[in-house]
Image 1 (cartoon, one colour):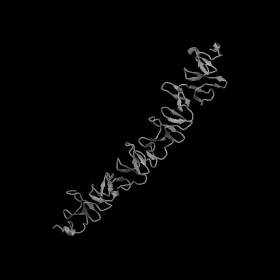
Image 2: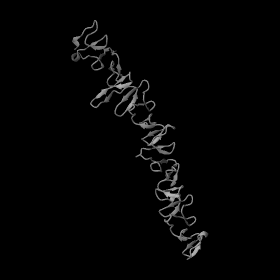
Image 3: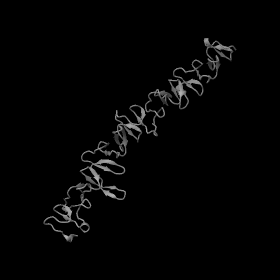
Image 4: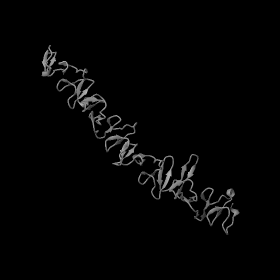
Length: 328
């Protein structure tokens, strides 16, 4: 069969030995001017267009070249993990970075904006419902993107519990903003450098606790409390904590010039005082050795006596007072 006239758009169909404008079976190959069951991959990659029954170098709009079968297909017919790319009209495994496109697993196309409940992930160039946890990315509902840091406007926080940017942290975490990095995140424990504390009223990490609350720190919690807890476990022992009004901090040792006072009947009253006092008819004396208010001074050990005028443990009693050795 003679070669058909290419300029007239005819192709040789071997079954009938005739020149046809549209191949009944297969595709018209412009290089050989013949109908062929498979379009050539060289010297140029071509794809079979089912609409025109011709081999084309670029598939028509809304169809995409599938290199596995050398045919133009709908986006949903692209192979697994490939997506229809409108910039090349090809099925691609990775959508173009320069065009900022992402593979949509539902539409099977490269898109600029992911569908509802999906987020664009720059690390994979895919629309995903779960952002890359290895890269520590968070779903940002305001931009529908996977982000390393949640936006300041709107004010959202990285919440590691749900791997999402949220306006309010979960009940067990606190919103915290790294001021020097403008990073916002939810933390289970407010950071120590710089020293932040959990404000239970506002559920935020703050540099300064609200008036009337005390800074408290242990291995699992840094927060502002209305009163200090009874004890904290040290590496070797339990330490009783006291309210220090000079620093508004829970301390196990009061600052110089102050003494630890424990109320005899109300365990919540434990504070640092400048001067010990009489409570329920019982004298308390300031002991410089233990830095606490005591009912009995360490007479036998340090030879000090309770002075009822100064409320201190002293070696020498005040004027018109005498040591009562019968009580020791």
